[in-house]
Image (cartoon, helix red, strand yellow):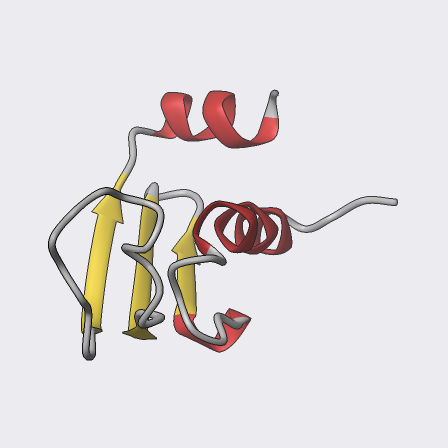
Length: 83
């Protein structure tokens, strides 16, 4: 079964950040494969996201309106799709 690059990245992010982000879905993800840009929008942190760390912190709420990441094309292909 072939996954589109967007779907593969979405699955990677869900696996990596699923314990931190509340209800992550594809509508929050924008990918520009040719430009190497990835943006995430409207992310809400789970209140339990710091529980695994030994920190004197209790998260009451956490929200990211927008975050953009620029990845060089070669590194992008190598790190996510050629594992």
